[in-house]
Length: 78
Image 1 (cartoon, rainbow, N blue to C red):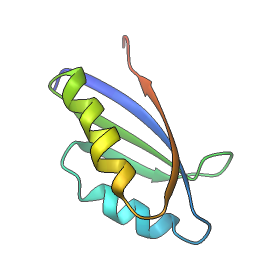
Image 2 (cartoon, rainbow, N blue to C red; image 1 turned 45 degrees about the vertical axis):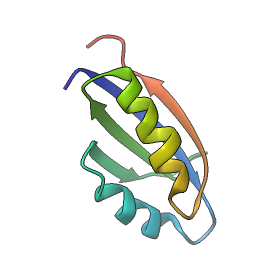
Image 3 (cartoon, rainbow, N blue to C red; image 1 turned 45 degrees about the horizontal axis):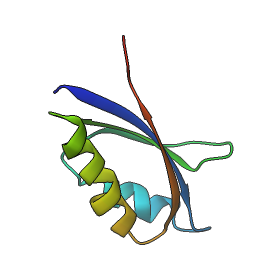
Image 4 (spheres, rainbow, N blue to C red; image 1 turned 60 degrees about the horizontal axis):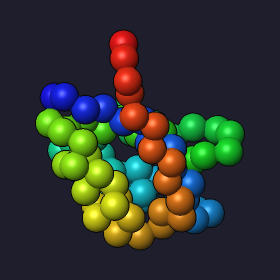
């Protein structure tokens, strides 16, 4: 895959587990972790190109019930 993003996710209180299960079902998600701190979940998504990754976030993730806010951080190097 060509483009990777770290996605910081804030969820509705009490919906973190439900959201993480839904995100794990998305094929582009390579990792979904429930974390402590200002965000509830950190996910890693990979896609062939930036438009595909953008569609995943804007059209796919924002339709998952329980997600309040996302912050996407694109990987620019390794």
